[in-house]
Length: 403
Image (cartoon, rainbow, N blue to C red; front, side, top):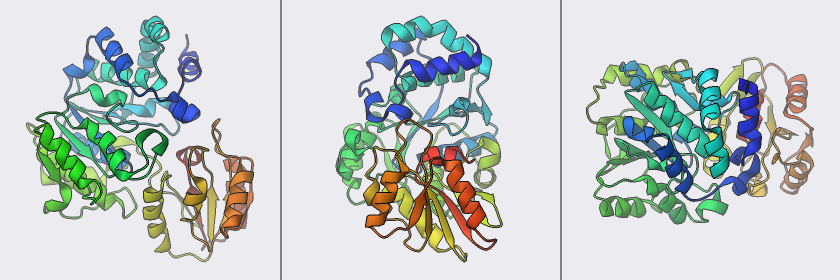
């Protein structure tokens, strides 16, 4: 197969959470364990940091990778989902995995993948571990895809684990209380492996402490440490919480020489070092156009707090959702004094903007519907004046179409 045919096969052959939603989640590790054995356990040949959490885990992974790169280490980075290019998921020192490797890997293992009916995510996790082992990285930062306990990445034995925070997301899979969700995230805590918690939350603190004690794992709450606020090139005040968890994680990491200079330089060069997109990303200045991938209650609250402190004449909101969210509850968080452009992200589970508009009208948000993200953005750009602000978000998939 050509590279494009390989990608088409990857996306079309088997379920993928981005397009199928809950139906793509298998909830067991049998397949990835079998695949790991088939690949001769590449995850056992590399050192790793494992990162879970509801919000901030992607940013935290990129911060960790950036600092480790500044310290001179060959650093793997596995994250999901991708925004523009499948290969964003698998990087070494900010460079995406080569097309030839992707093509060769699928070609070599295609019969195994088809026979065992691996999910898209299981395949890409195996691909990442094999790539990092082949390239002999010094360490790889591995982001949990969904939850933790039953996530395909959870076959690693990391040097340290990091949990950013717990919020209400993917409740149909992980549970409908913070305590239940925390139990799933706490599944990445390994026996005798330290775990860092970025944010102390009263509903979940006891669960993490209990699981860590059961597994004889040292538990560190970043809030308890004297960690300064660092400047970072990731805009958004919410990144301060992420950076403190990251620094606490690196302080816990043994056998790696990371200095204050590495931390400062790494946090100020995250985008340059790792290519992270979509976190309070400024697309242009006049009018100010900002996009952010926040898509659940806690993430949106932080972003809208940031939004409320910006200076602008009028606020334009280009917003779309996927249909497995409680969209009405999310819309209640959105600013009332704004002009809305409701759009449909170009994925099968993208929510019809007519439905979104109807829900928005019931809670006092005013706007129009547009068939695509681009049409909504074009209209917003046409109406906005130089001192206005255009915000693009609601879903990762909306942002993916504009970055």
